[in-house]
Length: 320
Ligand SMILES: *[C@@H]1O[C@H](CO)[C@@H](O)[C@H](O)[C@H]1NC(C)=O
Ligand SMILES: *[C@@H]1O[C@H](CO)[C@@H](O)[C@H](O)[C@H]1NC(C)=O
Ligand SMILES: *[C@@H]1O[C@H](CO)[C@@H](O)[C@H](O)[C@H]1NC(C)=O
Ligand SMILES: *[C@@H]1O[C@H](CO)[C@@H](O)[C@H](O)[C@H]1NC(C)=O
Image (cartoon, rainbow, N blue to C red; front, side, top):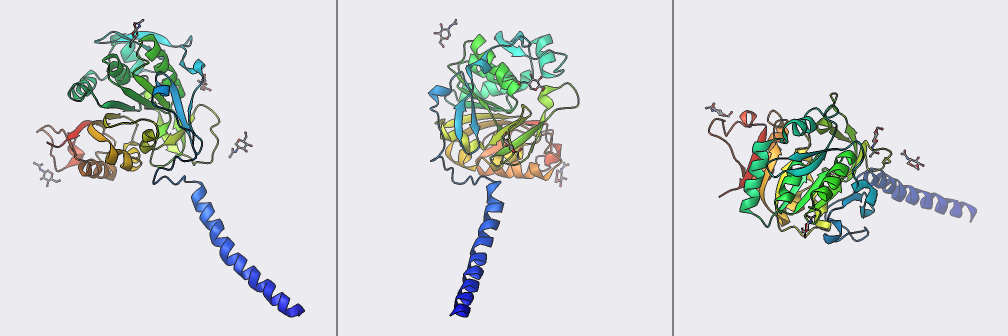
């Protein structure tokens, strides 16, 4: 009898190993990456679109959406108040010596990327019902202009210092009823991003890299990354105009945006293409937009069949 029990024990042990080892391997490879398709929001905290107006909200991996403390929207002593042209909209910028491109330009001239801002304004005029989604909003040159013109804006930035300024600006300019501000990165998977400061005093030159979904958000140089698809958890977006300026990360955003592009009628995208023109990510971006009916607005001066000749900033619109 004893030896029979012993044999059973071995069988049970072998069975246990065959079942548990694959399970552990499965867990090992799935914990770090939050499975995202289809969007499952059954267990996370949601907000209504209305509740987010004039607020900074954030989506924490696995928990859901929450509104940041009231204090994050109040202007701080080191915020510099200027006005942006042509509407004279008040905006909080950085000390121009600490942010030598965007803030300094706005400080000196009240403008930043005027020709591109104008193109987005033109697109909004054609589609006033569209939501303007500003990915990599920075301190809000585009977002504040669109909100001041009365368009609905969702501004996204992974740098807390940027979104704090933007929220204070929205209040100062009385456009809180037009703007929701999201403190997250947007990427191809829900994860944690490390923010990498530019070597020059240039807040807008901040890059990002994915760490994992299990690291702690310990200081203000990390941020939770979400998917563009996740915006649909709270915002009932029917049509959108998107600006994307995220320092080489544009293709990764699109990889997490398939549901978004299937459900939302994206009318126009302004995308910083310069980092992708000499890279295979350029091909990915072109194919992605093509699939969803968007074509680049190319001048006759560039070779349409050689994307390495395409300009650094590109507008994509719905094919006629
Ligand atoms: C702010 O905007 C609201 C409507 O959006 C308007 O009713 C209100 O008078 C404005 N307040 C100021 C101080 O301009
Ligand atoms: C995350 O933070 C918790 C509490 O501060 C700490 O116990 C844990 O070790 C941290 N984990 C990592 C990966 O740093
Ligand atoms: C972010 O970190 C920097 C450097 O540690 C600090 O000067 C700044 O006040 C922090 N900002 C916030 C909003 O915590
Ligand atoms: C445009 O690019 C294609 C593909 O690289 C090339 O075959 C063609 O010669 C180019 N045309 C001109 C006018 O340079």
